[in-house]
Length: 417
Ligand SMILES: Cc1ncc(COP(=O)(O)O)c(C=O)c1O
Image (cartoon, rainbow, N blue to C red; front, top):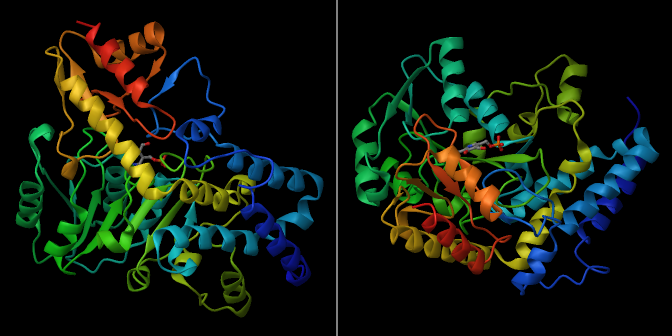
């Protein structure tokens, strides 16, 4: 094992350099939405309502990726030795945004990876159950199904609403409360449902549970769209990709957990952190921060992971509150416009207390995929079909869209009559 000490100095300096990627050559004005949009190479020939899908890299993130890529290509084995320091810089940036310390953050490649690791590794005693909902995405359902198949863990599902458009905080909390039993050890939910756009009242759910069960949240469609930390939400685990609404590097994600909650998770993939190696060398189980030990080892596409600090810096420069307000106001404008069209059925609640940036709808007499094709082909509007059994058309207004584009969506949807 080569010594990391000398390299570490260089790596830390490198991380500092990376963190300064916002300044200098760019004339980026975070207070100006036009300038924010100009940071993205997204084609102007289309309107990009897909923040829920996969990020385009804004200029500071692209520059940081390029810097790491260049060094990895130029001096691979030496540069990669800095991975402890670069990983720590990524963890610190995530913790700075989410709250807590860097040791509470596991680095992953996606939300799906985070959910898979969490639900595979959570220690359950015989008889303890996992409660999830009918509205969660495939990644949660499948992680739990695989877990149940492996060790017989009991997983139950509850329906929190029949008609998403009329979901309320009280009705969702009381349906969940009614489904919790003395055996419920884990409650596995999703902050913003990607099939309907309903936003769960996570804080109220945490208060209702009052510590009786671990509250695990697939946070991906609230993260970077809402201005709330896991601490404010009151959850135990907060699992998210950083490559959607945050517009971070593709192939990156994080899991935040309370330290006491992390103690209940067994790693699945061997970590490459130093405590893990020291444990191996000494023939004992590794001792170290559980989140770090739960971070899958092996070499990764490090140029992307190590550009995470720039993604958080970009978002913070604009301001999480401003991003959330911009996202919410465009979603509200879109919902208002769609609600005025008689042939369109809005699935997402109009009430901001139970919705976020995602907007889902169906069009009378038109299949969702036909609508998405026409929006793209005839109007240059990029949307998508929800990947659920019951499909709808889905929009994600964000920092790369503008109110005038929202109006263009409404006009295009009106023309579908
Ligand atoms: C609720 C939800 N969770 C997780 C994912 C997957 O995210 P990732 O690509 O980060 O694995 C999606 C869709 O992409 C989703 O809608």
